[in-house]
Image: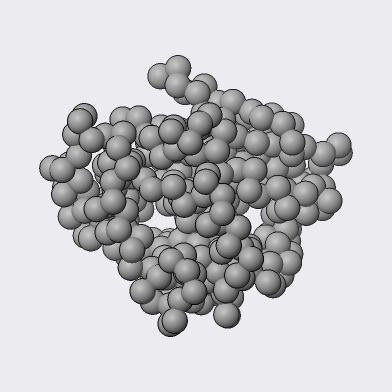
Length: 299
């Protein structure tokens, strides 16, 4: 594993981790979900390396390699959502320098920045993998963004914000019958849940500034005028757990698939995995998920 760094036109730097192979067949550029980090995906990177796939995984602001100390966690600069979309595009461009087919993927929050990337930088990647995502809640996100703009200012920008974190994430575990922990919605795999709870770099409460910028971005991605910017020539594979509350237990990702198709994107596929929740890649049957992703990357 090596650390890479992307320099934005604002001179801000965003870091990630890369796992490269000799004589690679393809590149996979990936961006993580909320409250996690790039090196958490080392098992996936090693699996894909064995298939001849170079892996680049970008951390968001305030996560992993972009948070040198726990005090830096979840701190987002102004316009961070747009900036991370730019960083994702620049990472794709960097990976493509080796001339190999380049596939871009994103999980959860990373799936939303991936949707934004499809709109802002169409056909930047040869194919796109959307994981643990959602769609069809633009009006709700717009209302939340207005509320965040009213309540979050310079004085509470970098402070953990329980109100918006509970508003944004609190409903997920309520959908789990007899939950063992507060984050059972992540997966059926209890070890994955316990490891998540034990790691101080996972599940750290988001700051006010995070919520203001994240919701501002989310209020834009499902507007029809923006979704129309997605190229009809994109190749998109959407994967999600059937019991993932982030994707409304399949409803949200089905909306996303249908909307892309209605807009004329011809090559859109959705796969829902039974008896899986949000982190399909960390469930007991994760190898089936890995195999499906690798096949999509290499086909």
